Picture 1 (spheres, rainbow, N blue to C red):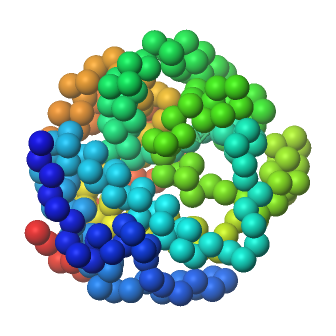
Picture 2: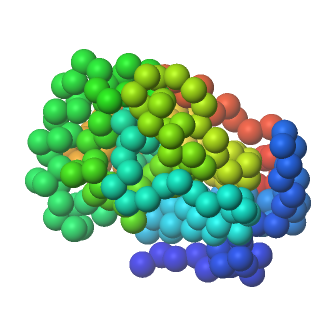
Length: 260
Ligand code: SF4
């Protein structure tokens, strides 16, 4: 098994979360943490193996979870098990998460359990409704009101929390209104995504985000897609989430930061 030990700064990020200041409309990250993170992500991505792919995903989501917990608001989150309205929408994921989740389903021998719901979702005319919280558009992994891949759910889902249940329900039922969320979550998500995408792009990986169900379906059907994706050949083109712009090659400054 190929594992690259994280440097001290990244281990610290995984256990304590990022430093940083977050105020309305502004955020400031610690530059040393940012450089250590993007370099380590780039080293992992350069390995191009399933093990390092999965290590990258686990560290990406661990730092996100711990950082969001570290900067949690004083107000209590409104989210709880069985509160499912945020699971009725199209979920966007990056390629490394697709391979990770597909592998976890395969190892747990859970493919058969999900097959029918994945097929139903892919056949649904409402799949691309574009509406946030659309009662006609349940996630394929939502089972009896609970996320069936909760431990391994995509980072987009981990970052989506609410401070107001009534705002979620209003949005779910009428499609109107805004959902208040913790002020630090969006900048932390952006910071991690810029670090990850820099690492992927300097290594020549495809620049697309994917719709969760279609991408998982494709990789479960043909695991060789992962090998070709590492070589820059995108065979998940039919699953590209065109609501999300392609991730352009990083600037020279970010490229220099990611040098490995
Ligand atoms: S993956 Fe899980 S948390 Fe994310 S939308 Fe689907 S059911 Fe909800």
